Structure formats: structure tokens, C-alpha cells
Length: 137
Image (tube, rainbow, N blue to C red; front, top):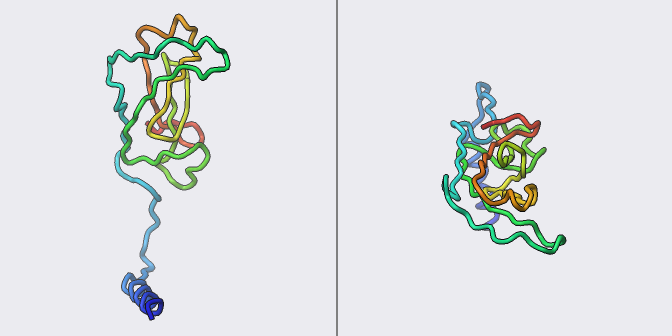
């Protein structure tokens, strides 16, 4: 009885929605103005990274960068399909590509720097690029 009621209700809702020959196709996903911001650490923050590991097999030191996005889908490279405002993050350290990811946290990989270069002032930028590597932001 419950299954029949659900089926009848679903059929009624589909009928109420109706179809029109005048429907226009729209791009899937977000369509507003895309935006990305670095949430943390704040601009100019002093961040402790600790001593570089002595053991070469140990993980390299990293700094987590938290980003905020609006009107964008973050997905792994090659998975955006028809979504127009979709891509992944590319992080640059002092103008050189350092890491990529599709989450709202991306690590600066300090192993890319010589140990003596890890300390001091650095410029971190985060961009959103589409599946073909073209910048969205």
C-alpha cells in the first residue's frame, strides 16, 4: 500500500511539473560569479613549520592552506565533464607550481625548497583551472 501511494504521488508530481517544447538547455552546475579566497593562514601570518625531517623517507614538511570557493565545483582533474565552472586547485609557491588538488585544503609542499629556503617570506597563490589547465580564476 505504501509503495503504491509513493508511486502514485511520484506520478502526480511528474505530471504537475509538465514538459514544454520551449525549454532551453542550461549549463549544469553553478552559474553565478565564481570566487576563491585563501581563508587561512591569513595574509602576512607567521607559520611554524618545524624542523625538516632528518630521515629522507619521512614525509616532507607541509603547510595546509584552507580556501573558500563560491559558485565553483572543485573536482579531480578530468572529471568536470559538461560543468563549466568546475576545476581543481593549483597552488604556486613563489611563482612556481607546487601542488594541485580538488579539496578545500591544499598543502604547500616545502620539500620542493632547499632546507635553508623554507624559512622566510614566501608568496603563495591558489588558482582554479579547468580540465584542460585553463584558468577559471
